[in-house]
Image 1 (cartoon, rainbow, N blue to C red):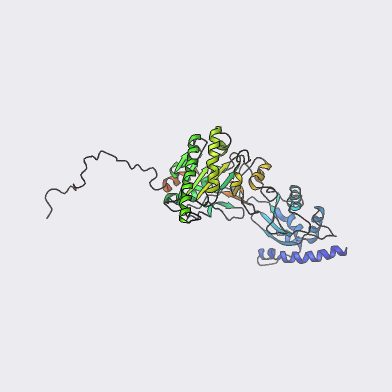
Image 2: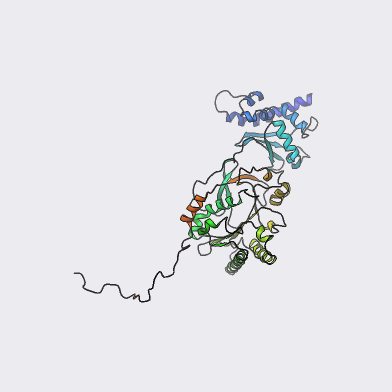
Length: 433
């Protein structure tokens, strides 16, 4: 019993420190200090969880039952706990000998959800030896959000395309990056691409950015935005030709940069950022004619491997992210997983153990197109976000207001001017006094 008393005393010190957030959040007036009182003022959906976390004895019972601590080895110390927009966030220190899998395994997370009486629990690891449990009772991305408007200042390395789970702005780098967007039917791939196009609109209008779009679905997905596109191809032959042109233009620019001693091209109106968008890539990498597949793969692979420094960025959309469908996926650093049909596909997008690290793409509801889990290559953190909703009316406005200057203008003579005399100013006759 002495061991438990000692633990409770030590745990109480930790709880008192972490509990300061609760005291601050309650504002003025009477501030509860007993775990039961703290739970009473918690949101109804979180009262059981708060009671367990705020009470060192309850925490000890929970960790013992889940095999994450004992009277002999001790219990994971509580570092911090705060309300969030989605529920509750709890930071704990892992015990010696524990691994991420002990906390983030599917059975462990389900056990946490049951004992804490919440809909779901996910786990991330912000620092070595620290586990952050995310208790989810509200979906902050349930409702679609529209952009506040097109902003003239375009940051090509931090483009606003949606909202994050915590209410922040979802920013995507486009310049010097390639993007992979994976998702099932009606998961929101096209919607995310339109959000990217909307963010790029002022740069498209000025000529700083050109869009080269391959739309294998007969042009039905992006045809309505044709006025914004420098290149638009929807046939097998046309798409292969466009990729060949992209490779040739990229190599030509890279040669000029090399001769000038430039390691990374900075886009200008004369030498813009070329954004190549390939929708439904499997149509060209797996289901086209064998000769077309071979040619497309060669040009596409060249642009992926050599295009970034020359300011050629590729955005690839796929339903099936497997190697059979997209063998070059390892060349794409930024991965976005929308709703996916199978758990195994999550690892194809975000890597091994991604689901245990919070990427639950297979659990995204059909009713929330545009919700995604995002990870940049080289970082372990996966964040949940939702792309802005861009309506057909919005697309029409974008085409009207942000089409590239000179796009669609007919510069051919509008009549027969063969007898035009540039010296005849029409001023023959009497001169006014």
